[in-house]
Image 1 (cartoon, rainbow, N blue to C red):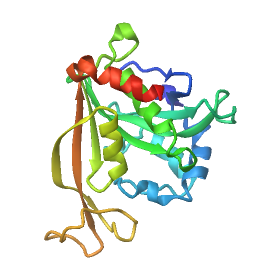
Image 2 (tube, rainbow, N blue to C red; image 1 turned 30 degrees about the vertical axis):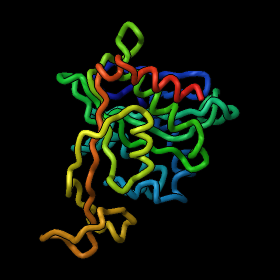
Image 3 (cartoon, one colour; image 1 turned 180 degrees about the vertical axis):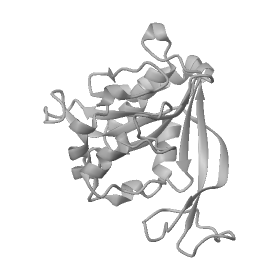
Length: 241
């Protein structure tokens, strides 16, 4: 169950009139998530992980304690939310709407009061709607608002994007993130050509297999001072459209 998470920070769901984020419950959400995502393996083309082959395999990732597993409940640096679209009718997954995807806090640090918004998947029926803007907006409000405002009071939120993932870059910029750098050769996608990954389009470096691809990663940041000095209002306006 989602309540078994070891996340660094006390966590709770957040919502507005159109969407809500609730703790991802594998027993409740995996079947629908797999059913809607499995016909679209391209969802994973920019990520290091491969598409799960079944709902059971997806569910197992939440209970797997392997180091670096960003979905694992045992990982204190990560917490996954289910995205519920409240503009849709009640469904088996939630009494207030339909499961529209997932978004996570990853690489969180209690010492440095920061986290990254990652593993964001908007399921195909909900793409190009209000869902992405509201999901990221709610996650940012939870992360950067003070505890008195119901937030975690973090000092910085990070965002990483494959340099070829133009939709992710556009979303980050629309949500107030500022690009702070680029990491070349950041990730090696072993057998990436076979597995449908998107690489940086460059000549393979020494030591690579001919089927490998490499990812360059763009880094974005949104700090507490930016949040205070206008980013909060920018998010509110974007969500009000």
